Amino acid sequence: MSTVIDSISARLDRRARQHVPGGVNSNVRLAAPHTYFERGVGARLFDVDGRDYVDYLLGQGPNILGHAPEKLQSDVAQAVRRGMLYGAQHEAEVLAAEQVCEILEWPEMVRFGVSGTESVQAALRLARAETGRRRFIRFEGHYHGWLDTTLASWSPDGECSPASAGQLSDHLAEAIPTPWNDLEAVRLQLEQHDDVAAIITEPVMLNAGSIVPRDGYLEGLRELADAFGVVLIFDEVITGFRVALGGAAQRYGVTPDLAVYGKAMAAGWPVSMLAGRADLMERFGSGEVNHSGTFNASVMATAATLSATTILREDDPYARMEAYGERLMDEVRGSAARHGLGLHVQGLGMAFHVSFSDGKAICDYRDLGRTDTERYGRLSRVLADHGVWVAGRGVWYVSAAHDERDMADTLTRVDQAFAEFARHER
Ligand code: PMP
Image (cartoon, rainbow, N blue to C red; front, side, top):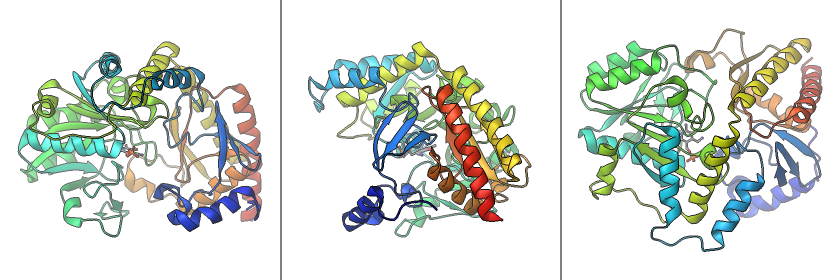
């Protein structure tokens, strides 16, 4: 609405489109405002036109310590003085592996990577090698990266189809789409298919709806996986080091066979990790299963992982983040009600979801079909105009850096944005 036509961002965007398709380097960013940022500090972002934003996108989740956390920056800067990439081993990768295994408690071995997408691929390949079967059960609306086997577009009644031109639909057919939060549905799939290698799940459905598992659901998945000899994979790319230091496995007390981490683990540096039981993971060690990567466990990656996980362990910001987020959820509900907007807010404090819906709880992906995503997309752009930076798809992330001043500014700005949005709709 108020994006100034000849702002510096608009000019950079026009230039970018000459050399960068769509002006962005990730298709996820196509629909968001093409704002250019100059710097981030704590919970704030500053754009090239001199405006500041309280940031609840946090780089799609990773910046759990806020922007430019000094200790993390200086730890990484110090490490890279000795080089960036050796193409061989260095001590920090041992330290980082020991530390994450100690923090997470359940895994015995880890392999570092660069993106969540590729570590998911490693997990699925390992599960196939382990079981000698090829397909995997996955859940409606869950996101596991952009590869041909995992990228999916979902119809409101749970049909899964390729989400991209050029995607190999027979690769996607390896997935058996199943409703989430419904153990009977999983049992039926396992009874009907004898070629299932793995069940892969986001343990909290944070990509769509901030839907928490029903009581006993993750435990039930564990039991079903054991009963049918199937590998249970938690995709903790968002939940890991966010919903608790030990991720969802710790928060809900359920142990997978394999889990994928990324995002918050290195607090903004591009690092992912596959963690798991030693007997499974040793298939990489023996050379039987291939997992490779030029940039795996680089000096930056291991320094960032060690530093971020040390800070998170020592500072223990989880209760603080959850309380901040819960208060914000209440305030957003209150402000929406004052302006006559039917906003529904649900989830965990450190990652919650805001949508236009009929007010009933959203318990699975099909419930999201009742929400008006186009209207929320418009609201997210008005929030950006008022200095609150959020994702267009409804998720709000909280960091350890959000403080009382950020809260106060957010509440004023949210209220102004909601007032303007309501005015425009009348
Ligand atoms: N799994 C989940 C649950 C994710 O949320 C994402 C990214 N949003 C991925 C996998 C893919 O991670 P990346 O973008 O690092 O490839």
